[in-house]
Length: 564
Ligand code: FAD
Image (cartoon, rainbow, N blue to C red; front, side):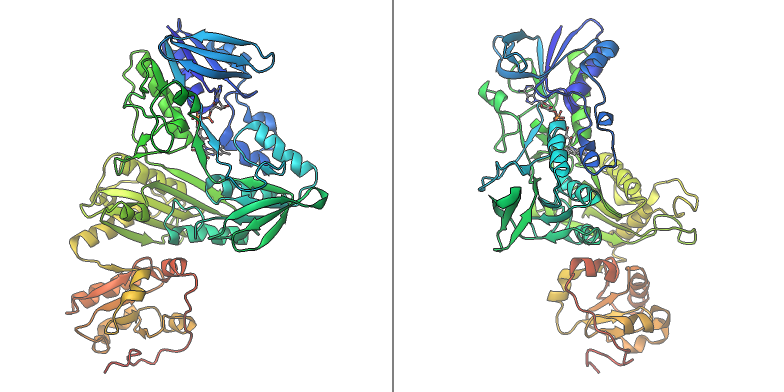
């Protein structure tokens, strides 16, 4: 069996290594256009920022090391020019010599990745305008830094844009981050993304949201002027485009393989393309969304690696099926971490899925143990209780909770199962009730009707007859409260029930959503039917509504709503 692989990084090399471990006698040829194979492209921003100072640390293998350890025939600087599926051949050019030759195959594995999108704006080909995908790309950026770049504009606030903005700040540059959407990291729900926007600002990045770059123009002295959609301009020595990637599938399309509307290769559950003997993996293919079942593009390294392994298993008789995609991802932005798995509330609602959500702000470990850091966790679940998505921001412990929730979604768990998960606990690591358990308890309460929540959107729609009840302490209320709120600290509620208007909706709130839940239970069991607790408390509301103004001043101890 002779297998030819196009692309020698994440998916391609994962395939080749597994294939060799399964088939000692197979002929495995890996054709890679770039000078490097098996490099850590996920590490590129950290090399740019200086955290991985040694460039060689990114290059995990060479053709020689792969020949020595796995008997692979790896050819760097060899570009595949065309595929001939009926003849089972590819045409290849050796970029060093210009020589072209034909390589035959029994099976062909395409792992050609994706190409950074370069928007069609003036100046996009100027030498100061770069992208970050490969080792030569990071070398070019290092060259601009070595030449004295001090001002950078990063375009796009997705994962790579955020990592690059952080990296360039670490190198001492003045960085402006321009994002078309009204929030950073659009994969997150807006209130969760806000924590990352604040982290960028703390890190010294000038964030411009709901703004696009309309052109880049050569300035005198080697710099450029970046023109923005709001009419502003930014002087820059370096512009890094991080506005997304496009699947690298032109070769396959020329050979007649079917692509979807987004240009991703269509594959079946065994990762077979529409041409016999041709498989495809990684950023170039469409995958099935584990939550919605829709065909989506998820350009992430873990998927590419697992798919490469699955194709090797398939070709060499071990079954080998593609798993669906959860889109589990994580990013560090200065002092803050954001992670996500499954689908966001925004995406699910846009797809017409009816969902519930819970927001909570627990410590990442027991609060009485020194060093507890706040975690902002959001869990999205269906009306049937199935866990559909989760997002978290914070510091320590974000990764752990999202990985637990990713496992839960993959296993099709229900929120009752979250409540019942038995997770490792000792005070330096956790609380006896893990934040994931807590999310499960809250979700169970919602499904049981014991808890109803309100959120930022209800501030606009709450009728004049509803009551805002602030159950924090008097001092907290005086330091800042929602306009029109009545203050009854939750510890006094049982003795001051007479002050709470009856027969109208009561919107209770506190700092994080816990005391308001306690108050809700008191009111519900004392005859108040229409009581809701603010999801995530003021901590979440203020992220959802950055412009919200809280009033200061002592409570009147009378109905601030003016109702008798
Ligand atoms: P690649 O790994 O990109 O490999 C494709 C290779 O095919 C390329 O080397 C290309 O030169 C070669 N090729 C293309 N056409 C031809 C041809 N005609 N002939 C020969 N060779 C060809 N994912 C995460 O999950 N976590 C992260 O933290 C993360 N960070 C990232 C940071 C950066 C800066 C980048 C760029 C990506 C990051 N990713 C991350 C995404 C991840 O790297 C990709 O999802 C993954 O590499 C995709 O694997 P692939 O095999 O499809 O493509």
